[in-house]
Image (cartoon, rainbow, N blue to C red):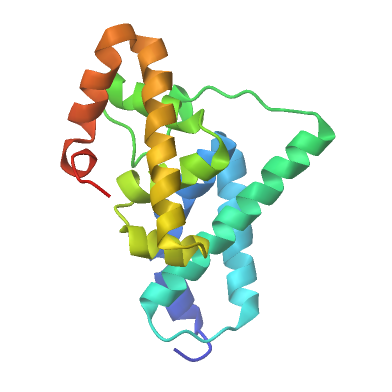
Length: 184
């Protein structure tokens, strides 16, 4: 793909905004900061004038930029010692909203994971990327993705168990029934 026209940029923006918003929100847990991060990513993307082979390359590039910008944001917040506590449930991204309180609880548990694990869980379960695709996006080996995914699942089970006592593991398996049963 050559330099983007305004119309092509608008199409890419419309196509990927929601997905990038979810990625940014998973780091910031604040809808306004997530929107700002995604806007910054698109501004940098527009100014970069990079050429891409296909739309999949653009998508990976945008996700990687969003992750990097979100991590920079978190570092900035930690360095300035002004952590912003925001309600999880009331500002969920629309793509994750549902009537089920269990879905909201699971998302809160995922958001409480450290950023490496949260990213893996979000990309694998919420965005339905394969191990190979995640490795490409994060620029790590497939075996590293598998290890992080396994550790993230273990930590997520612990968090959910603490919240739901003995019932926690049952509903996490049911929630992730399609992909959870796969062995890595």
